[in-house]
Image 1 (cartoon, rainbow, N blue to C red):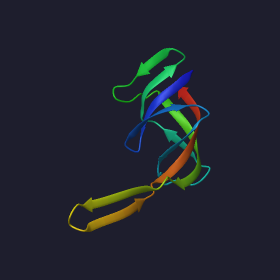
Image 2 (image 1 turned 30 degrees about the vertical axis):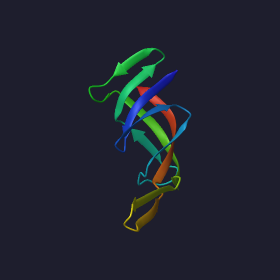
Image 3 (image 1 turned 135 degrees about the vertical axis):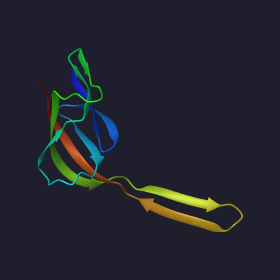
Length: 105
């Protein structure tokens, strides 16, 4: 099983080929190829490569499937005995990417 740990948009993700993942919004067009080069770790069928901090020899190719918005989160603030209440909603802007290939040079 081949997988990698990638840093993208300030977070780390465990990615595998053939699966799609939702990242924070990336300003690209639909259907465009994207290369993820901040690879921290790769497991190539038992052979583990660890970067310091990144692996320069590994590239991960993906394809932008869609731009979407995440589930709504409700932020509710209340101060007891003061009659102050504040309700606010938030939906995160996301980009769905299909991981097509993990190449090791």
